[in-house]
Image 1: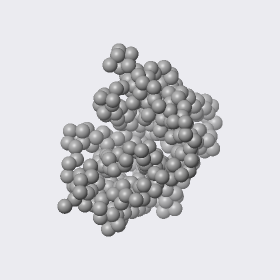
Image 2: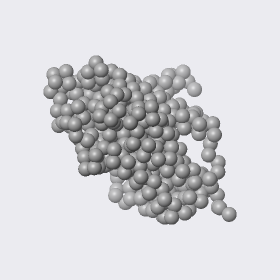
Image 3: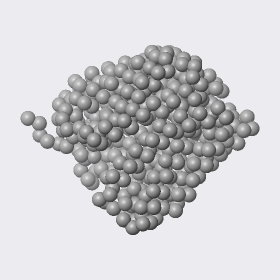
Length: 404
């Protein structure tokens, strides 16, 4: 690899770490500030919904734009917009002019820019390294991201003690740094751009294909429901403030805990790839996710809550790896983009929509019953899916071998 190429890859990793840190820090500050202002769980759900809507509406167009235009420019511009959004929050926070509407408007702007950044930044890697280096580059990129997801919330919660404006200003600087680094990346190979117009049929082809594959449909839909029902993270500010009484710093720790579990699980899977009974392992991991949610719902101790969230993150990562592998391995090459796009919409955005669902049920039934309901709902889904998708339950290996 030529010297400047490895430099470009390092720049890319630094840019990814900076942007992820900024996003995670801002998430903690926005959640705490919103709950501080309104004391309404429904508003925490709204923060999730307002982020979810742009990514859902733009999903079709973002994939198309990433295939047609300069991806580096798209990512850099999106991060610049994210920096501006946090700059607005910094100014309003310092002037004590932040209200519910300001936060929701800024989060909508963040969500829109993130829809472009998130989908497009993943397509930059193949142009920075050779094909032989790609698998290890993907692994390094994933580790850097998980590390930032662990450090970000804890750092955000810790810095919040100095005021919300401090967190937003540092987040703004990190997004700006990332945008500059991305704009200056030197690509090793030119990515092929697609000049085809986007049609409804071509997106729907992905959905049609998934519907025709019971193993894929089972894996994607079970994960979707688990994430929708188990979206306890939106309610963490309430747990931190009212139930565990640990303040913004404790909220940062709680937000980091699932990522610690996820990182541990991903490191474990790198050394011990899954070889047998992948179907049963997937069902077991989603059930583990549901049970960890139940424990978290009922916990009044910060130690137990953190432990439950670490296990939740671990279980979630195992099911994510199985689902992603099945999606990649069960899909013919010419369908991969569209099937991945459908999968991304279902899973990526269901996190934010799950946060809205949690906020809504918390406003209706109270916080603890809402999280408890989500955990129990996940366990019900696991049992139902065993009957609905026996092919998935019986699946032995990730790559398709006819079962005896």
